[in-house]
Image 1 (cartoon, one colour):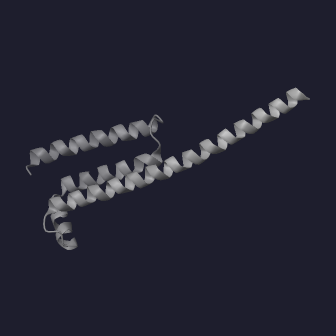
Image 2 (cartoon, rainbow, N blue to C red; image 1 turned 30 degrees about the horizontal axis):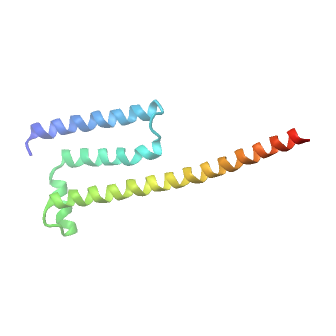
Image 3 (cartoon, one colour; image 1 turned 90 degrees about the horizontal axis):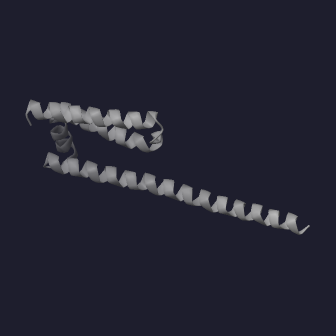
Length: 116
């Protein structure tokens, strides 16, 4: 990879990280969901600045081709995001159920008061 491409990629990653941080600051994105994206952005920035690092890491792990190592990282990242979002959906589902039950109880109390 040429130095020109590395600089372009680094600039794009820094812009993307800036957008994510700005969204957190403006409360458009929660920090707990953005942490994974910030870590990935930082990791890609490190790999962009030190391209020999992925080759060294792939050799250490026993993966013949560094590109396969990148695909492996992408797969692991995707699984982590899916897991985090599944937990968030489960929590929201429980909260929605509890809120519906509370609303039902409140409406029942209002009906009981009207009858008395």
